[in-house]
Length: 75
Image 1 (cartoon, rainbow, N blue to C red):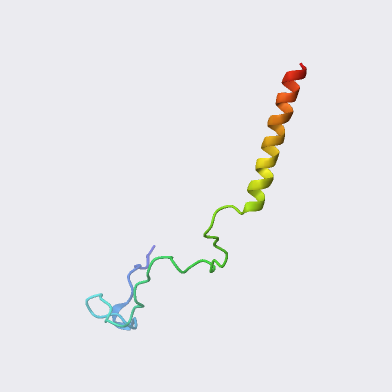
Image 2 (image 1 turned 90 degrees about the vertical axis):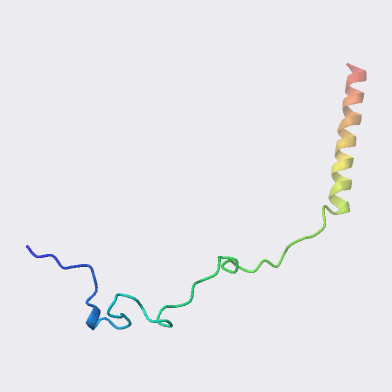
């Protein structure tokens, strides 16, 4: 059984030198990191919570506190 060598046939392979190297310009340049690989992010809020949600949450907390005080006074 004969097996084929995985090495390329250097004289017949384009871009290969006799020593196995590749001449400059034959390979693509190295890539940078994956910084630009994802989709562009267009929504990036820089400020914290808006006034509306904070007021609503504060009101709910205050209402629960008052209800617990009333419930404790009754029981």
